Image (tube, rainbow, N blue to C red; front, top):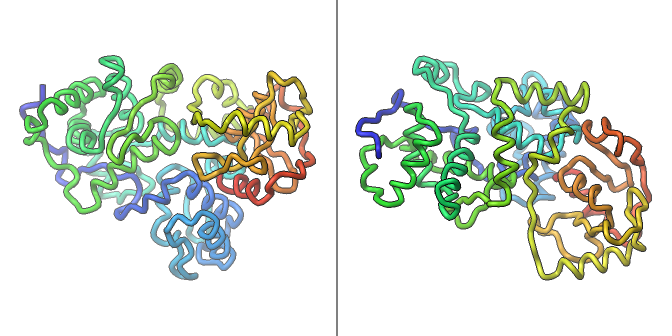
Length: 404
């Protein structure tokens, strides 16, 4: 049943992902990672330095997101939008010079995979986000005794909906804005939120008395950015502009991720433990959510790539047909083609590590592996340099190295 009486914990209560005026393209993993690596390459320099400007210009040209990243030495992206990197625990400050967090450095360098990054943010990201909020706003949250982990909450709600009925395992932007955000402000848990969503789908008018927690012109966009993050990183499927669905095949992995603990400081602990011992590798195979797209051209793509590569894994030399796969250099869901020059022959386990970001290949053939991979018995002896096949599109490989 909808709550009879429900109020905002304080008048300005809302969910804010990163900035007052969202730039949704910056929430895309390629943009987030591309800019992060520009920051990493220029740590210690002022954000207005020409080298930073040049790096941002290159990202802008390569990604063509429609967002102007390089806006002049005194008006580049980092002057107004650095909160995207602060909000996700990657950037410490740009004053007086650029300084990443240890977590940010490890993500930029590939010591932590993209999936490690996404999992840590899901578990750790909380409101209020002290990295981006004014102290006066944080004080209001604290006075209300309120802390919310929005990404985790949304996934827990989807799991509750799935357990009710697998066909109900989705959320819409309106449901989050009109039901979840008000209830979360009243300290409701995932069970009550899921129950209210089901009732909202039956009679939305019964919720008209719930407070409007997105009154500003951009507030609805900010609410949607939480759902976008979960979609970009493979936790939810975006069926339409407003419907975000949980995949049944991801339920076991998601349950394990959400049951792995919620202690504060997960991002810092993740970076520290990985840098010291590679401990993240023990969790990866169980809790990662991998985007899989089935297409008619896959069989032909595999056949052509394996033939061009002389049926040999580029890293291990393995030739057993049953374990060889064709890995896309530029992912299909990011406009990569099914042409042979966009494929590399890899052993199945190497392909999985390549897709998850634990293995990266540069255009020179240098092999970069994550801390987790380097700490294992099976993969510690992978080569640090390989000869790239002559048919390969090196430009696409460099694109992947910078942005994926």
